[in-house]
Every structure is written in structure tokens, then in C-alpha cells.
Image 1 (cartoon, helix red, strand yellow):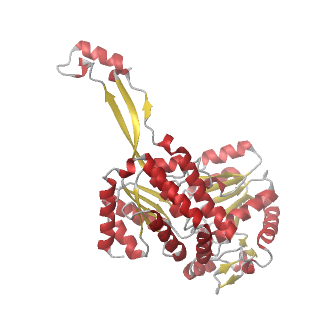
Image 2 (cartoon, rainbow, N blue to C red; image 1 turned 90 degrees about the vertical axis):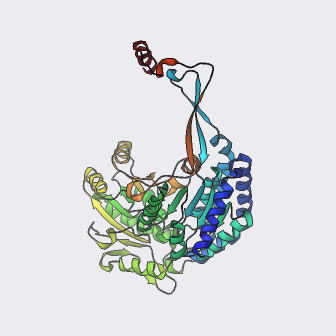
Image 3 (cartoon, helix red, strand yellow; image 1 turned 90 degrees about the horizontal axis):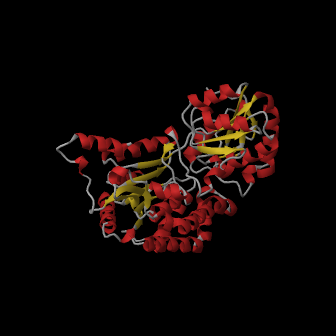
Length: 459
């Protein structure tokens, strides 16, 4: 799409926003209901598109994409009237007689840029929050998931006029043109490298941003952990979507005394969940692009592979692969893996493990397996991370009751449910002052009595 076409869409949305149409709560509810019906109607199409892009099974597609989106829609429709209400707050005595309140207001024209790994959910979830908050939206789905991006475009055009919600497909040229425009808010999900560019461009217009990035999310397995259950849940979270999940456990950091037992159980679970020949498992997906596939193959140190390691260039599939005797200096530990490779490292002191994690970039997620509540409290208190689980993986993002987001290098801001509504809203702080009383003490000329009264009122 040409730059002038993108500029025209942004202008149309800005003009539409200033008509005030999206300020109506009923208008927002109708929009969300329309989107809900369209997604339900196209449920099979969504599954087929995601499978064409990533090889996901229909079950996994619903569990991790369509189902989560419908859950967010249900939650938002249930709570939107409460979220949009003004909130009265305490008024200081010095402002007697007044009413102080916070009024949620939409930012205006917003841009949502989404990635390829969960192409439907990570596009539509923030859209739901943005529409609930009363914004207009331009969606830019990833060029690396073309089937899902095309379907998203078709669904949105079926539901909305482009002056309200528009979808712009394409690659770097379109991304560049969009980031040159002035938006009122930008929501980006993707890599740290691109996130930096988004933030740099947003700074030119002083546009606020939410960045949902990633990082090397540690999975700590402490010596009191239920090893069998830990292995089962780690294998699920790590190899879901072939490891192409921003909150996947990036590496295991376990107590050295239980490593052998843990590795034995992980091997068993990989076979149990994916079979002895995962490359032929029709429910096991593929790596998104050849470049990504080649990068992952380059991270496999064959001398450290203790399970898996086989690849298929023709299908871009890599077996669930476990690497042992890994150190923090190995290549696989220098970047976010974002694939089905699971390095295992050990510690002899949990205190030292916590220190080591805190010397690294803040991860998007942290997982801890332990039976000791004091250990859980210590790790979750002293480690810096976006979110996570105790005795499970990944599932913390599957609720609208908690915000999901990164911290430091793994991002800024959060969404899902109320947190998503807040992200796409600006809260106006307003004092409604009555006219029948006007305290004289703030006006010049200042008097000693006024000073005493001021001290009294401001205590």
C-alpha cells in the first residue's frame, strides 16, 4: 500500500474519531458483538489459516487463538459498562465544596502491530481492548503469516468501515509508512530489535506506546519440586507452537541434585506428548520461515543433544530437542531461542541462581517448580520479570482477570481485561467545583490568617 493511501486512512480515522461516535458505550458494545459473531462464523476458517501458516492443529488453534479471543470478548462485553464509568475519589477539604473524579477517555487513533507466532490472538485481543476503550484502530498483522493476515483483513472489512477499523497488510514498506504517521497510541508485539525502532519512531511524535516483547524466560526447578509433574508441564509450555511462544520456558535452571531425574522425565514426556517420531506427528507444527529454521538449526550443538535433534528442511520441522551440559556462554544462551530447543543448566545454590538471573535482561516470564512456599515467595520477590507461574508454565496469560505484559527489556505496559481497557484509555482527572462557595484564602493579597487556614486545610 502506498504511503499516501496510509496517510489518507489515518486522516479518515481521525476525522471519524472527532465526530464522537465511538464515545457511545452502546456503539462500542455493538462493535464488539459484531466482531464476536464474525469470529464464531469464521471459526473453521481461522483454524485453517493458522494451520496453513504454522501447522497448528485445530485443537491447539482453538485453545491458543480463537478460544482466548472469544474469552476476552465475553469478558469485555460483561464488564464494559463498569469500566467506562467515572470513578469518584476523595476531595481534599481545601477544595470544599467539589466533586473529584477520574473519567476514562479513549486515546483516539491507535495502531496495533502484531507478530506471526499467534497471528490471530495477538492481533484481535488488543483490538478488543482498544474498541472497548472507544478508539479507532489500524491493524498491521505480520507478513510472515499471510493466510491469517488475509483472513483477519476479510473479517474486519466484513464488520467495520475502514474509518473505524482498518487492516493494512504488507511488509517493511508498510510498517515504515505507518510509523511515520502520527498516532495517539501504538501497541506493538514482536522482537526487541523492532520494538526499539517502534519506540524511536513514536518518540518523534511523543506517542505513548505499549511494547510486548520477549526474552530468555527461565524455568527454575527447585529440589523439592514434583519432578514428574514439572516435566509434564515444562514439555507442554516449551514445545507448544514448536517453541514459538514469547512466554515459553527458554531454558531450565535446575538444582544439580535433581537434574538427572528431571531429564529422564522430560524425555518420557516428549515421547508421550509428541510420539517417538515428532516430525511425522500431524499435530506438531512447523517453524515459520526458512531463515528462522536455519537460525535454530545453527543453535543446535550436536555434542550436547540428549534427546531429539532431528530436522526436516522440506517441512521446516525440528524435533523437541533437549540440550544438556549447557553453560551461559553457549550460543543457545545468547539470544531468545523461540523454537523447540530446551537447554538445561544447573545451580548448586538457589540464592546464586537468583543472582544470576538478575544479572541478565529482565525476562517476559519466569517459572518456578517447588513444593516450598518460602522458596516461591523468595524467588517471586527477588527476581525481576513480567509475569509467570508457580508449578506450571504459560497459563498466566490465559486470563482476562490479570494484565499481561513485560518489564524492562521484555517490554512495557500490559493488556487483557481491565488492564487492556486501561492501556487504551487516558484517565482524565477532573474537579467539579461548586459556585455557591468560594474560599478567599488562596487569593492575594495574602494574610496571616489565610496562611493559618491553608495549613489547617492541607493537613
